[in-house]
Image: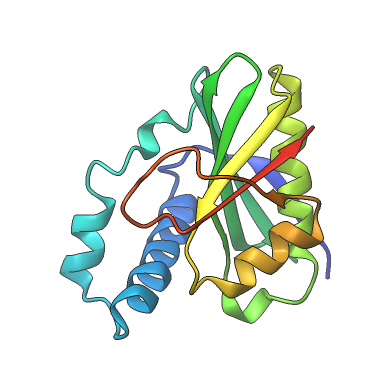
Length: 158
């Protein structure tokens, strides 16, 4: 089985399910209980995913053996700067190299549109994500905003 990653519309059936699984996991961890279908629907409403399209961003889907297994996107902040967002690998595919492949694909897509620095924020409870970023060359940086759920900030020069 091998991994592939490619740009895909954020609202394609596979991408939409991955985004839903992503929100379910981050919300459930935050609340310390399973998120309800209604809470997930509410969280996905007007979540800004519509900006994950050219020219404002991109959305990529990672597939393992052809099955949708991961996703990530980036949003252009300004010339040369993008924000990494919605990085998610389904639990059953973690530890198989998909996270690193997906990050490399996002970085390549960002580089292709002139991005020189990519940054992100994450929470303390998303331990696997913080480990993935550090493993792939992202370094912790001072806070670059004060959003509600941001507790750690990372950046990488491309």
